[in-house]
Length: 309
Image (cartoon, one colour):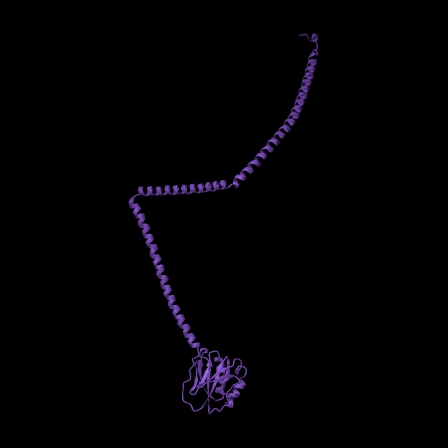
């Protein structure tokens, strides 16, 4: 081929390419404009639809609220009605009875299964099991009997111990008690001076000159006797005026006087002190116990009488 005759390519192809590209760009822009316009229209339409839907929902919600309030009022009225309360109580009782019936049926079914199992079990095995249960029960019985016997033995031992302790307590009390010997009646040639111990004090029936003590004792004379009633608050308190009582005893003639104490139950301590003072003064003494129920001391021709007059 002759190269010198070859002509350059025509530029129509480039023009066509340019036109096609421009036309495609225009179409692309048109499509984008259409898409954007449709999207805005759809958004505006959707927002308006949404507001209407919200209003409808609000109206429906208010209606439902009113209905709910009416239903609540109706239910409260029914709940406060005695008839409904009775029905509710009956329903609860019915449910409880149904539960009990169900429990009884289950227990009956279990018992039936046990009976079926027992009936289907081997009698020899059943007898062996019952013998084992009987042996265990007898062992428990023997253990309880042994425990009872041990308790009885312990109780007997404790009773013996208690009796021993009581005896020891009695012996201790006897050891702590002071044995007193009552005076024996005997003939004496001495003159008897009576002293009454009462109200915690010492009342001498005679003064130091052997005259009758009318200051501390109220005397009542009868045909057969003289009754001496000590005045409460008078007399001599050995714990306070021991010196005066000692002087009284020393003024008595020890060779011709015998002191006899009439001791009431409330003045034993005063008698002990007065007796010691009389012994220190060299006087012989004796004493007789009196009780409040004996009344005042009555002196007669043969001595005193510790009996109420």
